[in-house]
Every structure is written in C-alpha cells, then in structure tokens.
Length: 252
Ligand code: PGA
Image (cartoon, rainbow, N blue to C red; front, side):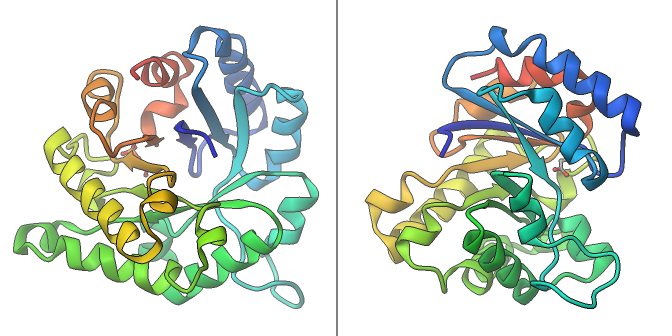
C-alpha cells in the first residue's frame, strides 16, 4: 500500500483524446516527484483500458476506477463489476464518493458490498467518507464519519482492512474552493486513526492510508500533507491539469 498517495478523481470529465493527453502529460513528469509518492489517475470506465496501455507499467502511477457495481454479476444493465475491473488488472477503485451517495442514492450498505466485492478480486477500495455543512456546523461530524466507517468497513477482518484506503472528504469543501484547514483535517484524520486503532490495533491501523480530499490545490497541499495523519490526497478539479496535479504530488 502506498504510504503517500495522490489520486486524481476525474469524475465526469475528459473524453478519449483529453484523457489520453492528460495521462501522457503526467507520465512525462512522474520522474520529478519524490520516490515515495505514488500517483493515481481515474478516467472514465470507457478509457481505463487505454489508460493502462498508455501507462505501460509505469510503477509511479496506477490507473484507478471511479466506481464499481454493488452487484457481483447478472442482469444489471449499465453496471461494471469488480470482476470486470480485475480483468484489467486494476489495483484501486474509489467507492462511496459523496457525489455517488448524493446523486445516486448510495448507502453505507451498498458501499459495504462494493468493498467486499473489490477485496474478493484483489482490488483496494479507496473509501470516501465525509460530512455535510449542516453536520459540520452542528458538531456531529465525527459521529457521522464513525457511522460511515462502522457500517461500511468494520465487518472486515484485520487482513482485509489492511487493503483499504480511506479518503476524508468534507462535502462542504468539495469543488467549493473552501478547504478544511490543516488543523480541521488533522483533527478528523486523527479521530479516524484512533477509531481504527480501537478496532484493529495500532500495528494495522497505522498502516492504513487516510487521504484528504476537498479543494486540495497546489497552494494548500503542502500544509495539509504535513499533518501527521494525512497520507495524501484525493484531488478533483486540480487533477484535471497535469501541472497542478504534479505540483500537489510534489508537496510532500
Ligand atoms: P475537488 O474534489 O478537489 O474538486 O474539491 C475532490 C473530490 O471530490 O474528490
């Protein structure tokens, strides 16, 4: 599992030509980032195969899926299964992004199924959790995050959770230009870490990467990544520009 991981979440952006050129631009510069930093890019499902071909086994960068079906296989028109992703030899898949929860009605139970199906296929889920603005303001945010973790991950055994990556993404900071301050982010990351330690012990919990996401940009990444329990970033808007994305990766 990468100790420092910067993943671009491309969302519903970039057609084939745009995806190709963005990947080529990033690959041309992977040599400039610190050796212990690993990159991830997540084009549309349609272009995953192409992205894998382009990356040609570059060990500094993985191709990441943005989502997976919570069904294993069968009559579910339009879905993409964990088995399909694993047949591309993908290593990582984002699950439970707040946009999936908000616009597509994903529940913690759905996310739990996705995590299980991915782990069965040897793919590491990047599980997103986050509170909305009202929950932040009323002070219930830690309880919300703990519930998300408990309901989607705490059925796992230690050897399974060791293959999971968490991403804390406060919904009020996603795409809004309003970032959590480094202290706000660290408070949450430390609480998540402590919650994981309580369940799985320090040896396992300290190895689980916890990424931060939500308006992470070249000008704030350094301070965020300097926090003890922040192991990297899940980057939306700024990952669509190779220069900005690599500046963020260079912020450790
Ligand atoms: P943002 O998105 O960097 O554009 O805020 C982050 C995310 O949604 O993963």
